[in-house]
Amino acid sequence: MGGHDAGTQHQFTGFAKYFNAFTITGRRNCVLATYASIVAIGLFFKLKPKKQAAIKE
Amino acid sequence: MVLTLILGLFDQFFSPYFLGVPLLAIAIAAPWVLFPKPSNRVINGRSLVAQNSFVLNFAKQILLPLNVGAHKWALLLTVLMVNLITLNLLGLLPYTFTPTTQLPLNMGFAIPLWLATVVIGLRNQPTIALGHLLPEGTPAPLIPVLIIIETISLFVRPFALGVRLTANLAAGHLLIQLLSSATLFLIDQMWPVAILTGLVMALLTLLELAVAAIQAYVFVLLLSLYLQENT
Image 1: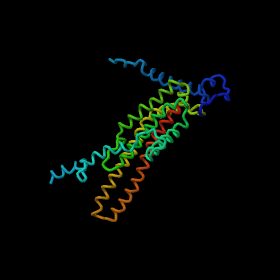
Image 2: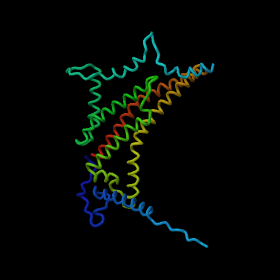
Image 3: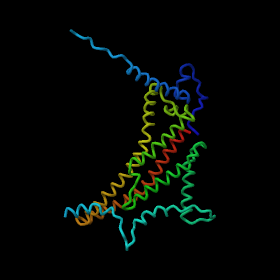
């Protein structure tokens, strides 16, 4: 079946080895990282302590 | 006069009798005779040969781009195609209800089958299934945006499948009803215009025949494409 990149012709190093838009594992890692970021941002805003307004006399 | 009007509203739903024969019986039995029973004869009749030829050629065509692992869907896809094309074409007969104009039915087809393709992909080859959410060669700044867009597009697929079929068929039937009402009304008022609207209705009916078959094919084809992505 066509469309799946074996990634043999791409020689990435460092960060790009795991997160790139060319190899199938790179694309998968980008997707998972994006989902994790969205969940993290959502959790951050949900769990952030709400500031109570100071009572003025 | 009011009572006559009220009673007259429901007359169209009474199945007619012709020469004492209740046509309802024939209407119910008609789809049954459209599909001849498979036989073990070497040389079959024309209708059975035509049916077999259609089913086999369709199955061959739809399975061409699919992996061997997806071939277990052959029966389901073929049955779905025969079912949809039958419902669509029979619905074009006068006074025949078309089930595929109802959104719940089409969503009942679309959602479970789409979900099955997604679950198969995530279960058997999760890396490839997740990797499909990012088009190959995307520039780095666009990666998060495109992933979000592709995810939304993935979840919109079943609704697109169901609504496409519903809208195409419902709109076609509505147009036929409007044109036929207009033709009947105009026959007394302006008969040349009635001929024109009648002609447009005839052409529209031909178009609806094509749309009925094409929409059934598109539904099954898209489903096979989603399956191809995930197997």
